Length: 237
Image 1: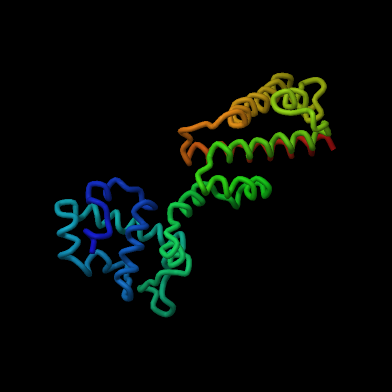
Image 2: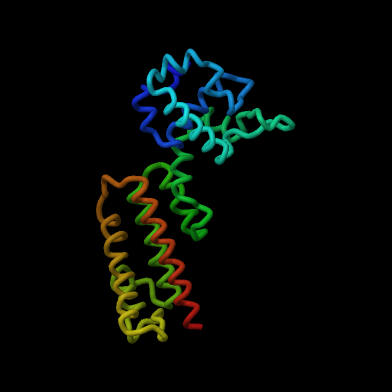
């Protein structure tokens, strides 16, 4: 069963726990009842030896790492009144049925619970389907809209020019008057440079080669900027 479900042992040993976990979950599904973390690597000893060969001990460690990850993400859980035994949860069954584990892993990469609600609602579908350049564009468009609204600027003010106006050290409506001169300059350059770097290119052309990790980092950075806009807006009141 290991040979049928898991990738070659050399590949399996290189996988991160969340990557190996889907193979473990599929294996547990085929095993059916009697899922026990402590004897998981013992129950099919001859089979696992045939699969892992001289890498047996390392592979067992990888299996336990994946098992713990599955528990943490609630794909498996302790049986009621038999806590040493486990069952595949509704979430785990749903992932197996829909073969949607990759999507879940992406969602875990970008913790939606910590994001601005508007940002999470608008970028989540784009991010999960792998449309990373559009997700990044949408994230920084939200920053632009929030700056314009907080600063009381008209719709015609957009992009880098809007950021320079809103955070201008002397006249910007969102400039923190209590900050030092250098900090005011830095804030203006931060927002204008970020919009120029992240929003403008993705609005003009398709930007390829974006990894999920890079997209997640960019979206989290947009989230930080939204927090900073809220702080600057509050400082004006």
